Length: 333
Length: 251
Image (cartoon, rainbow over all chains, first blue to last red; front, side, top):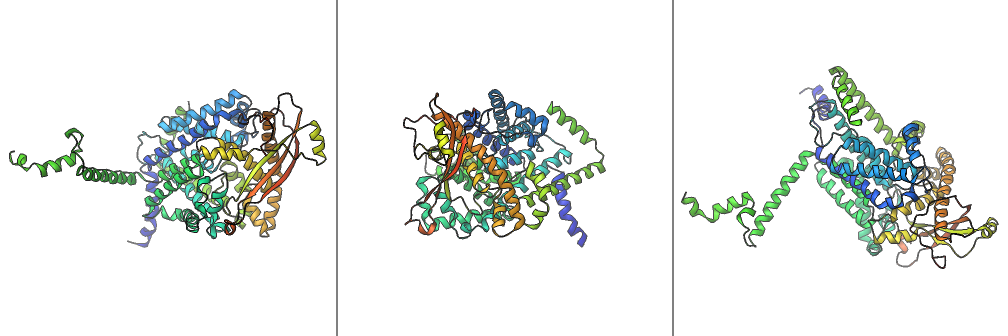
C-alpha cells in the first residue's frame, strides 16, 4: 500500500458513507418521536395560557418577521394579533408534533413544526430553555432526512442529503456537549467540585427532599465532576468503542435531570438525540443481545416455575428441552 | 402542494449529470463545513477570531441558528431571584414618583410557581416562571448570551466591555418592557374590577445560596432591590392562575 492510498482511503470511505446508503434510519425515527413528544408536551401544558404568553395582549411582543422574513413572518405576526390566530398556530404545532410521533408526512410535519415553533419562540424569547434551542436547530436539519418508509436508490442525491443531515445533527450535538463541558471546566464551582450543591439548593431546579443529600461531600463532588467530564469527553467517546455505553449513561443522566430537576421537555429532546446517534447495526446487535438475555432469563425462571403450556413456550427452548427430557420419543421415531 | 414541490425537486436533482452531481455534492459539503465552522466560532469563548468575525458570525449563526450551551456554566445559578410587584393606585403612584414606596402589599410572583412546580413536574409552572426569572437576569446582567462578554470585560478586555455595555442598554430596555407587562397583567388579575390602578412598582428579591463551606452554620441572606415604578401597560392579558387574595399580600 502506497502513502497515497493511505491518505485517500479515509476520504473515500467518508465519501461513500455520505453517498451510498442512508444511515441511522432507526435513530432518525426515535428522534422524530422524541421531538414530537417534546413539542406535544409543551403545547399540552402551555396551551391553557396561550393568551397570556403569546396572545394579542400577552406578555410576549416579539416579531417573527425578524427570522422568517416579511412575507411568512408578516402572516404569522398577523395571526398573533388575534386569540383565534394564536390558538391556530398552537394547534398546527400540535398536529405537526403528532405526525412526527406517528411517522406520517414527516417532512411536511417537520416544516410546519419548525415554522410554528420558531414563531412562538420569537413571540416570547424569554420562555424557551436549552431543549427548545436544540430542538429548533435540529428541526432545520430534520427537513433533509428521509421519511421512515422511503425506499431510495443507493447513491441518489436524497441519500446524500439524508446522510449530510445525520452528520449535521451529530456535529451539533458534539458542539453542544463540548461547549458546555469546556465552559464548566473553567468555572470556579465546577473546578472545585461543588457546583451541584449550588444547583440543588435553588428553588428553580431542585427538589427540597434532595437538598440534604447534596450537602454530602462525596455525592456533590461526584455529581459535579461526572457530568463535566462526560460532556468534555463526549466528542471523543462517541468515536470510540465506548460509544454505546457512553450514550446509555447519557440517557440515564437525562432521565435523572427530568425527574430531579423537572426539565422534562429538555430531557426528552436530549434522550432522543442520544438514541439518534446509535447506528442501525448497533440497534440490531442490541436487539439480539436483549433477545438472548430474555431467552436466558426464561430458561432460568423455568427451572423454578411450572412449565407453561406448549403453545406459550418459546420455540428454541422447547426443542432443547424436549430433546433432553424425552429421549424415548426420539428413540421411537 | 409541498409534497409535490419535494417530488419535482427530486426529479430535477435526479437529472443532474454525474459530474454536476459530484460538484453539487461538493458544494453542499462546503456549505456544511462553513456553517459548522461559524457555529464553533459563535459558541467559543471570546477570542481574537470571534472578535474579528463578530459581524459575520452574529449576522448568520446568531440570527438564524442562535444557541447557548452554557447549562449552569461557567458558574451555576446560585440564587433564587423573585419578581416582586406592588400594584399602585393614582395617589400611591404620585408618592412613588417621589421615591416613597409602600412597605406593605408586595407580591412575590415567582416563588409560588417554583413551589407548585416542585409538586408537579408535568405542569407549566416552570415555564410560567421563566419570563420572570429570565427578565430579571436580562435586566441585571444581560442573561446567558452576554455572560462571556461580561466575563471577558471583567478580565480587562476593552472590546468586550464596549460590546457588553452597548448590548446591556438594549437588554435592559427589553427586560423592563417584559417585566412591566407581567406585573401589569398580574395587577389587573388581583385588583378589584373598579379599582383605581395606575401603575406597578417592581422589585427583585435575591436570596443567595449559603456558600458550601458554611452550609451547616449560616442561613441564606435576602436582598431586595427596587427596579422602579412604571405606568400600567394597557390591556395585558391575565395568566388566570393568581386568585385575588382577601388581604392583598403574601409578603
